[in-house]
Length: 208
Image (cartoon, rainbow, N blue to C red):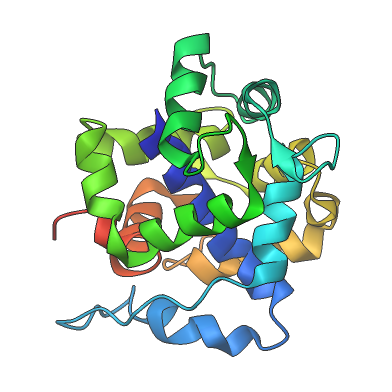
């Protein structure tokens, strides 16, 4: 379960970074590598703190600086992920480094850092994830009608459901799609999604 959420957040952060960063070109080296991947994929860019805070805030419903189990469950529901009580408890336990039963922003940042290269593969393996299976589940969160493609409208709906104003801005959604749309059809299919995760932000999760 946590691997699916991690993939979802990686993809979401990668897309939002193109809009939140004052210099959008920071993503271009590894995004361009999707069309002609080099032998050694370029490292992903550092996550913008503003971007992480924005994602964190979507989970922190009452804005008290902590994500509770109830807030996490509600956010997962908004994402279309049905998680039981034990699933939520396990997810919090894996992130709750200080043992207070909550997720604070520092712990959230450490989670991203572990995904970004130092522990992502181990986390996915520990979850028993099968690689493409977890990726497919994360992809399906965005692919509302399950036709195998993420459209501008579907991306906007997910962003809006999580409270991101970019979801209601069609041009922003188009720009984010363009950054991943290798074949130029105006949508993101699973292969494009998978290539982004393998060669970009999520490459350390998956064996190549």
